Figure 1 (cartoon, one colour):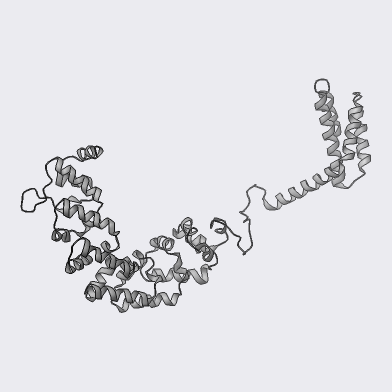
Figure 2 (spheres, one colour; figure 1 turned 120 degrees about the vertical axis):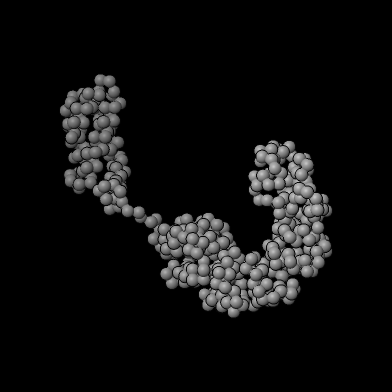
Length: 391
């Protein structure tokens, strides 16, 4: 090997003296490293061997050789350390990677004591619970920004704790494809006592709610199961008494809009006052609004008042006509106004039921612009779209 380096150096000598010197240094370094790593001979004798072998070429560059040998004498400790580190690195690589170069995944952290992190991502590989939640469709990016959720989730055991809650939800009518969405919206279900959850289900069954109604209540009002039986019972009792509802009517309202109980009594009283004092509905009419569209009672009051004012005072629809289509109060005022202005422009803004070409509230708030233009305006939807650009 030394003779090969000698031959290479002699070829480079006429044109590249610096390259020749570099080759000698590399040759010397390899010789010293080999001697140190194999434990054979002494450093001094190996350096002398290098001097003799390379010097046999008679190139007249002995000064370079002596200088390089001195450099090696001064830095032999560093070379020895590098040789040891290289061997250690090679041994480590051989134990981690198989012969084909593709090794199994090695988790960075093996400890069960989780470190602090701003996300749940570092814990997914170690947590069976988090992996299964991801498989079910749970959005961990939403959970990690919710208060204290990440802390208690990574401490839950999938086999002995979380599975019990999953089975409970499925047993009470939650579809498997909805589990991910439900847990994303209500991860605090895992903090409830499983016996308390069963008591809350038993309460609904005692009030003659059907299994389908119970499943709908759990899905639509995600925090229902987090509320105590005492709280739910007091709110249902107030609702029945305040609006003189029968048992069937209470079940109808709650099944249609389960969130009406979660909003609390205070907001329902605010909406009732607004319907009565600001919009002029009678008590009997307010009950009809509740039975037909209970979602009105969890809608922003300012939104309701603005839409009512435009429909009743600007377009001239009476309270009785609004009661036929109470959903109009949840429509955006701007959307109704755009359609009214378009009908007025083409001469079809006729809201008197006693005259021809009457336009009802139901027709005015048709969901799709295409259907509105076809059935009410009698024009292509492109004409309506061009009109909207002028507003």
